[in-house]
Image (cartoon, rainbow, N blue to C red; front, side, top):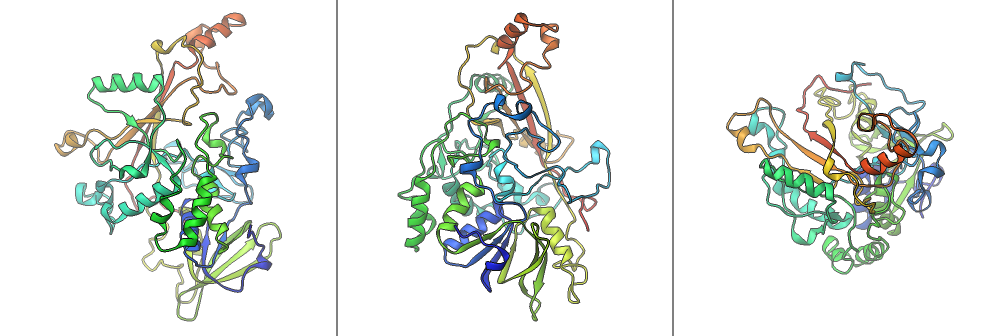
Length: 467
């Protein structure tokens, strides 16, 4: 596999891609499969899911039974093997330490970035999401619309594998039938919450997640994605055959050694590397885009994190896909006589309008779910059913006191117990102990349902990052 060091790179590439996550992986895949010579630079270390993913290890096999620590906030088995809210040697300062204004920056210093860790929820933005200012006067309209992006949503869903259903909900776009895999069977908790939500006039539907529920169509999909490239079709067909459907046995957040869920390291990079057109250099911290005599990008400068040495790589084009804040850092750091305030920053807007997801969560104990027989309910990791935003009509009528909306993800079930299972139930058990505590855990475990609200932050200039 063409993992190269700084000293063994080509003299020049067609394209340099900085970052190896969702954007970097997709860019490198699309370019290299069509013949471009691509160099991918990743600030973190090399990561191989097939050999490094502890999919089937149980909590008792981990230090402290897998409990979270400052270095592993999501537990010992989390796929972020290097990174987190704080990265040693890479400090950042917040303007506010108050909870309401505190920005937490998750960084994954590893090949594949945050795609190794994320929840795999893969919803399409709807037509309203591309033209929000035209609807409510807030934020900005995109210069493109849903109809421009829809064909690329189709291609991505076919490539990575997304399950879900078409429900015809407002601003919740349906996919062409051939693009979606069937969703897994709902859990008892999903059915119960959906039933009670329906009584309130609220519709719950299967979520869309990048997890394989059946083998991919390796006979027809490659030709659809690469219609005039027989070599790319062959490479992709072979790669699709190597991906197995989900076993419904372990959390996606651990990563996936059988390549059932989407990670850049399991979906984009293997076929791109097989094309022979992609080189990858890890531990390469890019700090500057360099320019040629005509003011166009000519390459990047980076530091080898293992040696501390400075290097330069040349290319005809550069793709910055290093995540929002890291790409801003590189642009602002790329100062020159022509661009004294940083590259592409003549308006001073680079780094402004930093956005995050608005979220809130709650959970409840459902007596109807007590004392159910123990079944394998690992299912899709996390929430596999959700409620799309349902108050568009009320919003248009001016009955709401806020703009935009949110969706609600929910999930429960008797998943594999982890460290701390049974803790925090004193309000139900009265602080039982011994045999009575075991009986209480068996009674109440699986009777809790969690609800996660996910909304949209309206962009504002006061939310920004800078050097």
